[in-house]
Image (cartoon, rainbow, N blue to C red):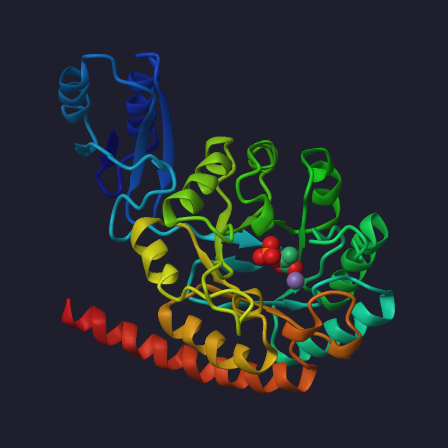
Length: 348
Ligand code: PEP
Ligand code: MN
């Protein structure tokens, strides 16, 4: 069940609605949107759904009460205008008007490597520096990352350039430590249904990028988001990074349709990762532009100054000159998208 408050209603009115819900042994969850607040009722309304509905509907400031049939109640979009904006670092916002570019190497390999890549992508227009320090690898004898030493490099170089940072966390017991170094926690595709990890990042208030599992349905991806939101962390970003299909030329199949699907189903910002989505450098620019056209709030791009020497994901890492050209193209595509959206708004 969800309670839509009238636009401009007071904090006391919202509090009264929550009190009524909590008083029934249920849990009230407030989402303060751009135009109105929405209170979601968590828990089973035993028998008295109609009674509670009528009581809530008669309260001052309440516009209406509706049922939510979706299992991902907190992640679900309840209103056409509902959109969550996740603050990143000091002055960035994901889910707002600005397209946020996240770029950097798959793995942090050395200070020299990270600085060379970071300086270049920053100059080309990237906002957030990514780099893996804990790497999930298919084979146990592959490079597993520099761990805490890598996190220190990420923090220091991000700090020098004024770029917020994003890095993967793989274990619940590392969440606190990784949170001290990075601005955004990434939960990888392989951990998309690691429920203890989802609960652990839900206990922080850090922005969390949730990669879609390689075989996850849309509902499962939204279910993962629900775990983090349920822990009390509202700063969730959904990331489409490709799914496993019968295709073999590409590493995965970049699911562009996931972007409008997630937008329709959820109020959470959407990041698109064409690097893991197709896994082949020459294909990434066009697929990235398609993601911008489809409405992604953010792009995630792996980059390397010497991809042929990269310790992980070299074949999908853009060279720095390629990244610079792609950024110029992204700006043009983003402007086209802005104009398309304006046209749509005029029609509706
Ligand atoms: C990564 O971002 O380097 C990564 C391992 O991503 P994914 O979990 O999407 O494979
Ligand atoms: Mn990678």
